[in-house]
Image (tube, rainbow, N blue to C red):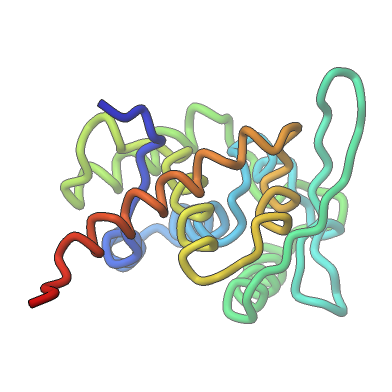
Length: 179
């Protein structure tokens, strides 16, 4: 029995996004799936964290009383969605994008996942972080960048995702007919 983190295939994530009517919830899902942020990191985002020149987000993390920063690139679509959200809601540069509790975000996202028939044990926001990691590796992102973007303290924390992609590729390989 493997103890790999649960993740979702891209088509299931897109289904969840398309079924989400609430703009804030949809944006939160998109941020988590396209950046690999933790809920607490996403909730700390302000407009000042969004680079006005290069589509990216700077995340501040406090671990073991040490503050660190990491820059995560974002695609143009998410970048524009963030800019429009900030303008539409008139969010000042030092105000948080989302004034919600971790539990409120968890509940909103879990509810959307369950509506789209995601299994109960997989229906939580951190699954989007795992999905981000797996999708990045599947698309060829070098491991060292993924490690940096996820903000893991150790390489071992990030290595689990290479094992998932190897497991998935082995299943695909087993389906190849050689005769």
